[in-house]
Image (cartoon, rainbow, N blue to C red; front, side, top):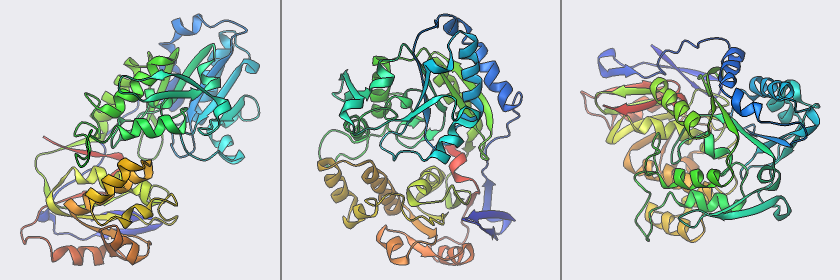
Length: 420
């Protein structure tokens, strides 16, 4: 029996063993040391870059906001210690939080991100809407304007930090994403994300702008070109386990180190499947991973990779904080994906892109959502509401063949099924 978390609740999955093809979990990882050791070892490879830093230079470190666990409270103090040893005093170091278009951070959130550095190293939040904080560097080859945080753009030395994750249309997080959308203007963020859509009305989403793919991915290309306009001295990226512990660290050239991190993530957090199933039962992993619909979409997206067209997905996502953005649910006022896409092309919003992705999967599969969201809102999004896993399985029985097959995915945001 496999337990599935939904918010703070735990539901056992009672399926006949012969109907379960596999339980999909991240592949076993044995970290080559404690988190601190992994970070130290990664930074050892940046000795040449650090040797070029000089006293009196302004060093800016970019790191992620509170919505993305990275292990920053572990790696930032180690990184600053390396800078101190290279002759850079605390007063010449600033940490910029890569908010993208997110809200500013609270003091407790700054404390969490900086760890022991809080109150010692200057920290500032990027503001995508303040023209006085932005500088225009040019356009990408596809016309995306690159407007970046002035402190970042004008730093004598720049270091990007974050974590490598799967991303449902940029391919992977981490690396170049710290620049765009991390410290870019709202205009730049929207333009780069708009690249997910093919040119031309009604042509839908690019088939290359998908999870775990960088090659030919137009969204990745926009981010890559933007980072090349203001390349860092080096990057430091982590990979985290499902329980948010650092299991690997990669540092060095912003292109090569990021590629290494992506390869590691794919090797250890993908799960090869020999066939698609009639049923996928997937949980985000409980609170806070299922705090809202936007966050829950990640598990919905990954789980769909193991499901037959027209199959049934049971998604456990409490969503105690609702949808995650006040404009997100409004996009479901459009009856069809085609109409939503047309509206998105006229007035692009990142939340609208996520809503389109939810609606598209709700149309391709039969999705039963175990959630605390109002039932009518669930139906409006194209899904069937259920109060618990037992009810969801009872509903699914009416749609499944008698000899159905299934996959169980208890930590849906941490494993990507890959059809082999």
